[in-house]
Image (tube, rainbow, N blue to C red; front, side):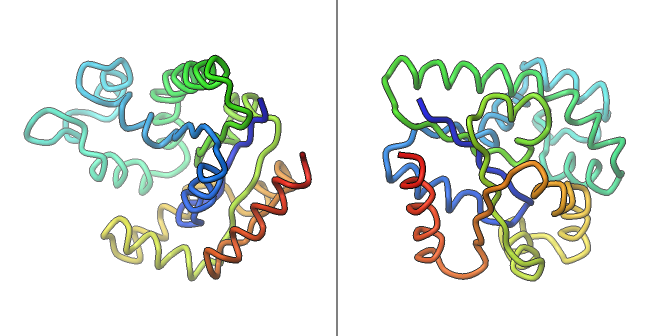
Length: 197
């Protein structure tokens, strides 16, 4: 089974590339969806996060409010990002392994991991190849603000909290430009799929 990891900075448009691959019959592992599941009340990552960040990250129902957690983490610098990752990554990795095992059992020829933090060890070890999705800073900023309903300062804070562009390029030689149209992205994706057949 061919395993492709999709990564890139927030707002780059990874989901567009993942959707195009799904249209080609890929089994998709959505790390962001898994990250939502593992912080639900009663989960191990939930307990770790409340211990690390306090009850102020909870909503009125005792669930983790992702916006509250995100604001605290992404405005707090690298140390708090590392704390968040330590609380969640081990559980996310385990769930990803389980999903990929299911894909193998079902005979999928292609599996895709869509993960913003794919390059953080050990996630990239699950992949045969890694594709980085890119977009201009202006495009990313607009997408983040519209998607998350936040102002420019908060959006910029989220962008700064992630890897810089150079570190993405050093790790993954395949770069897909998603600054323009879906048609252009599809052209790049189909070309990449054909190269490895």
